[in-house]
Amino acid sequence: MQSSTQNFSSTNELLNRRSVLGPAYRLFYDQPLELVKGDGVWVEDARGRQFLDAYNNVPVVGHCNPAVVAALTQQAATLNTHTRYLHENIVRYAERLLDLFPSGLDTAMFTCTGSEANDLALRIAGEFTGQRGLIVTENAYHGVTAAVAEISPSLAETAPHVRVIPPPSQFAGPPDAVADRFAQAVDRAADDLEAKGIGIAALMLDSVFASDGLYVESSNALATAADRIHARGGLFVVDEVQGGFARTGSHWWSFQRDDCMPDMVSMGKPMGNGHPVAGLVLQRHLLEHFGNNYRYFNTFGGNTVSAAVGLAVLDELERINAPTHVHDMGLYVSNALDRLAQQYDCIGAVRGAGLYWCIDVHDPSSDSASDARIAESIVNGMCHAGVLIGTSGIHGNSLKIRPPLVFQTEHVDRLISTLEQQCKKLRA
Ligand code: PMP
Image (cartoon, rainbow, N blue to C red; front, top):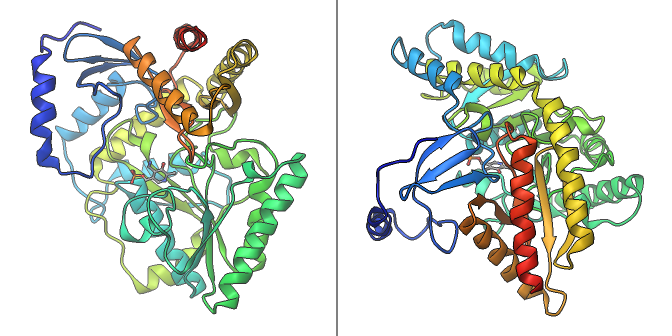
């Protein structure tokens, strides 16, 4: 990547001018980055420093992927309209997307954000079941609209029609026991909703339990929970905004690690490689009530350019054979992290699959509050050393590694050696 010509003073000036955005926004890192360029797994700041991006899952086929940019610019220069006109792109995109799902998931609807996709899923579930009650995990995040913010306990207090359950990771024991205890938690939450006369519309689960600190085991936890919610007349909605598009390797969707069949699957983030493309894939019969009672028109969702971008992203993911590539990279990362865990006390539990990893860090000589500080200091230290990762988990004591899927072994090596330097510093 060629160096940019912008200089450092612009970053400080921007920090001040940024107050126009108000107090709700947050920046990463102790020294916020002003990024000005991206190329594959690399980004560059206004000072011309290059960083290996091991954090961003949106540019899934690489920052500024040339094929995606070409599809975007070509379609933008030709026509951009919406779903009220016939166009080949949107139909072809829906067909291509649905080809990646088990056959019962046969209908696609398009939005601009993951939040909108989840919001739509809630409306459809409410209309289909005639009920409002929802079950989510205790630190779930499902987005920013009013309806999904109130089912996102990691963001705010949940609404009275919402029940929270522990994620499967909080149950000890062999996979079957974990799945069973998770299903019991679903039952208890459903009992409570019924006892309060609220009724059950859906169980919504993030397929990788990302904000709960990540859980990607094949324990059949999703399948068992799905059976329980179906037995109570509710729908099983899987949020693949984090776990989708081969993120955890081997499959296109993280729910496929279990033998389960969702009623609806929401997706977003990587879908447009940075262009706002998101959507909902669902079983057609669920739409009968909703489709008869409401028309669905999302002005920008599924527009002609977005569909062209989505198609180009699918082409690129298929070109690199993403499920296999990500699976192989995952094994390589796993071996490297296991070695670090054996050598350094500050590395605790390591969870993950494919190119999504969470590493619990801890300060062996101190209390759990300092674990989060250590995680923060590792993340900042790595940023200063030119590698971007983040923190995660309810207590902020986990490192989050979630790079573009075009990550290769040499990038993993750089990531691991930089993390090891931080571990050595802590030991010293
Ligand atoms: N669901 C999950 C699991 C997410 O991680 C996010 C975004 N972080 C969303 C939904 C919301 O997506 P968006 O920001 O595109 O609205």
